[in-house]
Image 1 (cartoon, one colour):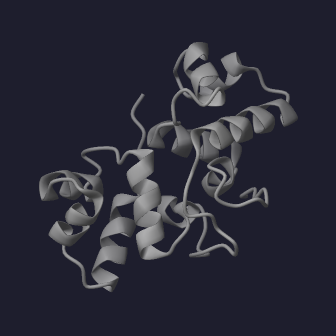
Image 2 (image 1 turned 120 degrees about the vertical axis):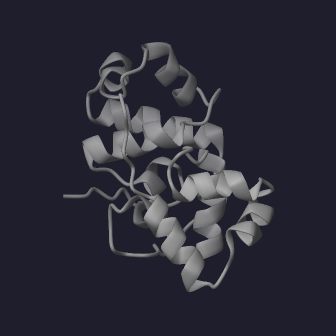
Amino acid sequence: MVIFMKYGNTLKYLRQELEQTQEQLANYLDISRFTYCHYETEYLIIPTVNLVKLSNYFNVSIDYIFGFTNITQYKKIKKEIDRKIVGERLKNWRKENKLTQKEVANVLNTVQPVITNYENGKNLITTSFLYELCKHYKISADYLLGRIDKKIMFK
C-alpha cells in the first residue's frame, strides 16, 4: 500500500517562512541534509520523533503539518511524547470505537501484533500508520500522540 501524506510541501513552506535552510534543519534534527531533503520531497517518511521535533521547532501542530486542519497550533500542547502514553491513547481510542486490533491492523494493511506493540508502548507508531489512522478515522494526530488532551475529530 502506498500512502501519500502530502506533508512535504508544508515542511518546505514552514522552513522558508522562517528563512531556514535544509542544512540548518538537518543539523537541528542531527541528520544529513540529504535525509532532510528527502523528508520535504517525501522520498523518505519522516520518523515520528523527528515529526514531533519539527512541529515544536515550527510551533505548529502535527495535524497542521498533515493538512488535517488550517489551525496552526492548539492551546496547551505538550512538546514531548511518551510511547506508553501514546499506546494508552491508541488502546483507549480503539476500545471507545469498539474496534479490534485486527480491524485497525486491516485498515493499516499490517498485522495485529504491530498494533499490540504500539498499544503496549513497545514501539512508537510510525508516521505513515499515524497519518493513515488519523485520516481514515478523522481523529487528531496530536491527540493520539498525547500532545493535546482534547479529543479532536475532523470532518
